Length: 269
Ligand code: 8Y7
Image 1 (cartoon, rainbow, N blue to C red):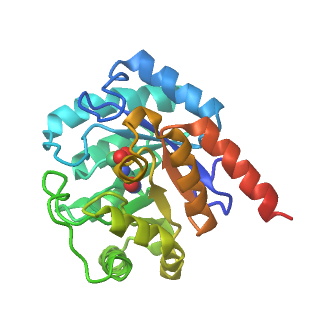
Image 2: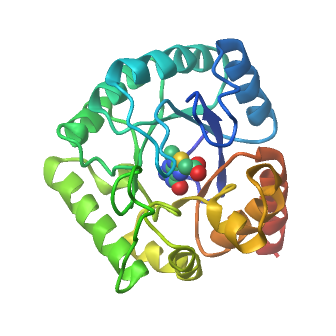
Image 3: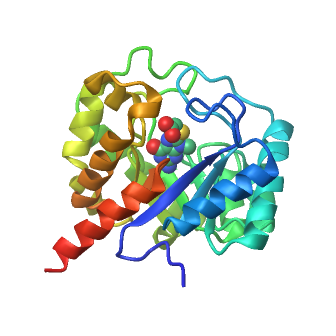
């Protein structure tokens, strides 16, 4: 039985359906390719597949509601009818959340932490769990001049405030997963500070999800292009799990699952 809230670290595989998606170049825009890719990630050990129709990379332009619905709904419908995985819908739009839930999505991944009008109400209506992620600014401008006095403190205060906003409307903490939002309005230093102190997030009493896969912090430190960041991504995923992360969002499922199996074997002894 798939369980998002298991104490065993879970791997969320990224299926990107945006034509301008920065790392897969929109290769999986077609339905059959999307299903094939999702099935491969499931066989490799992913228990969650994250599907997003809106590129959230730095500098990206927002997409319209209709474009987003057209991109994600057919894929959600196809995968949910064929695979035994939890489908995560990466969206900030209440209408997409509701439609995706109707077609079988099992998790809402909102990089905007349900700050859109009616987003909390929509999640309550779906009865699904939700990821609340921290970011500073919007994708279009967030990397221009990120600034914090203390990045870990400010991320924690933001997430605490969003949890409180959810709870005040009736969305309970048991449904909430939190994410510090690596790369979203953070410099290289901020990202490393956050990862170093990640275990502090456990005090908010929600499972922690992290997305570090192929991110620019790897490129910047190691001077590697996108397609050569797999080894470093696995290393960062492992460091995050060591610091308490329960779900890792990754492009490369197989090596991540292998690393986490080793981590569990060591942890069990
Ligand atoms: C994250 C994410 C992206 C992340 C969560 C990328 C959609 C950029 N990153 N969602 N999405 N956490 N929850 O590099 O870190 O994959 S998109």
